Length: 384
Image (cartoon, rainbow, N blue to C red; front, top):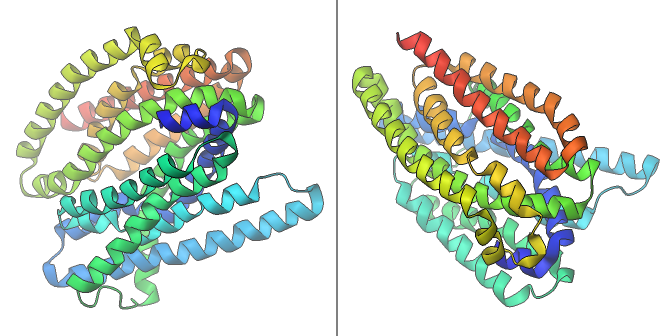
């Protein structure tokens, strides 16, 4: 990320970040909540049912991918006829490879069977290929299309490797399931899909709104800080992804034991989070200069505002995905994230208009703390 930020510059890095925000909508639709419903179902299933569950979720994602692709290109061709070409279609197409990779790489399956090392191996294989390509081939701002393509290739390469591995080690996984099973998977994932869509409204939409109200240069300054925070968030989500199927099974067997585990995790997150986030706040200037260079001085204030976002995300992830969902509080979980999405949409436009990138960062910070507080209150009420 620091290499790309320096080589591409704020404008072209901002163009990629803006398109990545748009790609998030496609990813959420294609995922359809399976990242949470599928691991839980597979972890709790008997061994002989795992193959049919894989087929149901895998082909469910394939069907959605085909549908959203057809819908997008129909809308794109219509707007091109009526309004002219409003998006960089080449940039869109190369980044769409990441959406295809999201379908091909069944992270949810490896989570469900609790073999996370395969996710690590496959992900690292894709990322090493991507990083080598970026360092060897991306040399100037004009290479932004290539940079976007190489980043999108990470899940695609991992997905291709995973399909080859699964066909070799598991038989019958890719047998077409009955259509009613695929439809049933959509019903199972609906509330989680709504929640994920709500999350997307206050994450990826921030970059899209900032791009609409300002320009790609400002998006570049904001995205530099956001990328750094996203790296930390991904670490939190990686831990949660590993714990989720384990805690789902534990909650099913012994709720009190599961809650004890959760309390220890929250305490650890509070201690580490406060130290880490405070350090990030006070050393933002040094970190930005070291990683991104002198051209990104405007990123410092954004990073300071976002510095405590990881703490709120860590606690709310434990409250939501690791506690509420295993306790079958799906509806409360979904309503909380929808509430957060509405709050974010109501606040982002005036704050962005008044303070630009800093206003968008404020929206993100306030939204994440709102989620943490509401989820904590709901759990307190439920477990008293």
